[in-house]
Length: 636
Image (cartoon, rainbow, N blue to C red; front, side, top):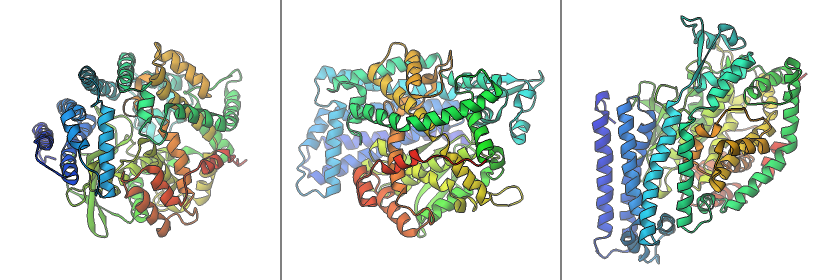
């Protein structure tokens, strides 16, 4: 990356264009008629893949994070060009014939796995379809790239706000109030960015103000993204049908652990039943508490669930989130995360003076036994024009002996005190980053980093969340302003309070899952109405009138119909964590085996096989069921 902040446009164009030119040259070489063995063909393919993935990664990241709109626009345009090259590669019948003609006899297992996956990818791209169908698939792919970018951009740029009287801030932390001064008109601006919306919906006592902000938050992207989604859903469905599938979910599931669209529906139904009693119990407790303030209340909605969940945890479990957040200063939390993962995975992080895209970004080299294994970039605070959620982005895919992995963590946390929920999110997202780096010692780009089946990728991150709930771990970095560690008994109460609301959490996640799945499966004419129906079926909170959640549900882009991934992975994560001793979270034997069997393997084997190797058995539903059935123990 350039040292000169004014040189980004030229650098980005040169970087992406150079990698695309290299990829095209290598792909052309594969078709030059020269006699080559299977291994040589696969190596050339891999060289081209490295270049293509590199171009895709840098364009995709800068499109979401660079502070200069001109650079973001250029990155978006270059990402479209990368997508065109990828589409052409997948539909190139001459190139497919070269790969298909290779003799797998004598290939090592990893090369044989690559050959199988590449040929499968060709078929899923439509290389064996008619000329007319291939032309249509090409047009669909190009349009889908644009629509996906449009959908993300609208969400990223649509920051809404409400203006409220100062007394509407009653209940919010003092430092938060200090950071939101009263304007010349006597009102305070509260935005839909996470550092505003999460504390406000959790602590603000004013129900009308909470409702106004929640409605604004749920209407981001509306109405623009409704039309974008309709076209995106229709084109995905058309693509799947051209490729011989009944629906987009059937096409998408075919290469995942779940395997079939029907299995997704069965999984949703199974979890809905499993969580029903727990969710209803949680709902009734919250509604009872709401009725102390509003005797006529008969329902819960998104504007009050976080607020009353916080009150119940404070009153029933003696856990006050404002008291808790005193111990989570951002700087200490960031360093604590690095210290915890360093100890757990046997790595070292060193700050490096490297070019970055914004002054907020910090770069670290990652070392194992003194040897540099990769680089990470932490971009953790919100700003205008930046990605609004939390995610890990690749910069460079690691290839053994050729290039070290690089990745970026892009989040939107406050600069001062953090809620514990933010701490858990940071641990979760960092789990993706460490997976990318530790899994980035692969021969083939196809298997580097987070390259397992997509419905497994959340499991390592969800498991890492457990370290953000352990008293011994938290006391190493969760200190108040005087340097006093968070009390152990407070952490134990936090853990007890965590069990409250998990049924509601699962049912809420099933609502998101069903939206992701059914909008793709059925493509309803009225997306808002279907979302309303699905919320009534799965979520115990009622729909808020005149809101359009789907228009800002960013996962409908990258995850498409596969939001079920989060709950599917959570089942596996609970089983993975069962191998650890809760009394010795840093047991080097277990942690080392987990690192080597799961993280370091990247996508070099199927996820189910990696899990079975680590656990010594296939994964099961038992640990998740036990977690879900565990009742919260209140402190009165």
